[in-house]
Length: 111
Image (cartoon, rainbow, N blue to C red; front, side, top):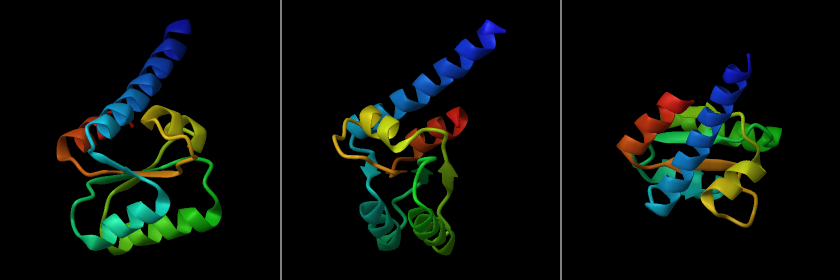
């Protein structure tokens, strides 16, 4: 059963790597306030990813915004610290939005 554990870790590394690549390509927006502003401003956001350890207030705020503006969102298994480290931010980031169709479809396959 060791191969199943390794495949899960490899998939996790791929997802975090894809987030880092999207950040370096400037196809990712990070931060709760920035993400909600981006969602409200127009149809640029393709996918919103929410960390597993966000507060209830933040979760409600992001989910309500995504549902109102009909934006797809996913709650992923990573913590704020892991997401922040993957995208190269020094502060904790609980929400990221992908603004490119190709990156969002690649991330959807990994989630």
